[in-house]
Length: 297
Length: 297
Image (cartoon, rainbow over all chains, first blue to last red):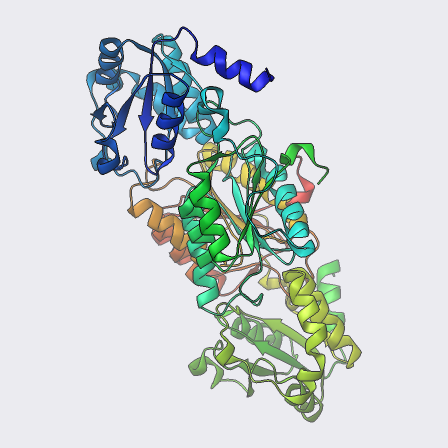
């Protein structure tokens, strides 16, 4: 039995029900299916405003709002959950999507301190708050390692030499900025850095590249350039591994890119079959590459 | 006489007419005025599609299109210009704004090679092409050092301790990414990197921060965060020093920032009085800080 399989077995064996905090996208559902297939019973805590309501209905679930930590804790106790997996996107939260209950209010000063320090601090801050309340934050890939992108090419198309040089440059750039707790993705075309992800997220960054192209501001022809995505070096991997899905492929295709390179073993993929089909149809490559820190820049 | 004043005198003494290639913004006109005040006669080569037509009419000028290098060379000879200063923004070029003459066509392979390597290569590539044709590219600040941002605070408002920490973080980040030939600006608020400039330019990056704020995605209250702008370490300073103007202040104010930090002695400023007035009115600080490479990150 491999180390990964053994870890997965340990994470599923003799455990209570698993709580899945469910943000946007298809990843939480792919994970719920994978966990169930491994015999791990689970219940969704669907985040109002982000979780896909139609998909949520097909699973045992509770709706919660961001800020209802008290309600969340009570429901976890009712359901007999001590382990929580947090999955899915949380882009574009607006004040109206937050409902502060009393427990959360009292935690606010601590949350605000974490927020000020950037994403990494926020996530490890929340993980620490969870731990104080006896809630164990578990990484999705500990339960279902099959959701991790493997090393090598996923679909029919392979990166060219130019693409590989772009991947190396993007990977080196992500390595250099990792300690600044900035975004996890860049777009590089013919050695030229077109875009760096900030708080706007990967999808909006790709939309920006598509817009630059539509405005004639990119001289590289369509079919050039790579989206390179990697976890931040000090990121809490229980909480916030980068993820790709069909939507990422579609956004990369709209941006006229040649393909997508993500960190093998540290990137989650929802619905790999659909993603590969979409990439093949769009003529994009998708490849798992070594982690930035493990390369010489 | 200071070294800077001596250099400026040397750059003006015994020289022919100065050609000013005039992109967008007010900087080319501020420079033409400054050069004239120093007794250096000049003529504008206004780039069709970028140069402000109303302002151009007030100066001796020729209109040229990007791609008319043959016409440009002939006009330089007619006007007796051997020195060229290139100033102003060239954002959003579209194919329709380019008119390729025969001389430029023959140079295209060389230009395309330069383009593929990113901005720095493009600029040094163009400088090399100019040199081959006996055209000397001169830095605006060699002729008119008074257009450089000095060290220290420019207006009434000063950066707070939080702002200074944000400036240090932004400066360190720019130092770390400089060798990747990526954008020259970042936005940092409370230690959190909000945005990194790619090929979209500073104004669009600030517009993005304004939009994130409007969408409720930034938790820092308005009046927090700094635009930090610096030259790239290997940038050709004859050609492409970063510049700020009233528009930069307005965009930073719309993005809800506390202020702007630029590299002292390596940033051009058009109309400093108007910029300071705009900053004071908006309650923003503007400060000249040491160069990224000269700080420990």
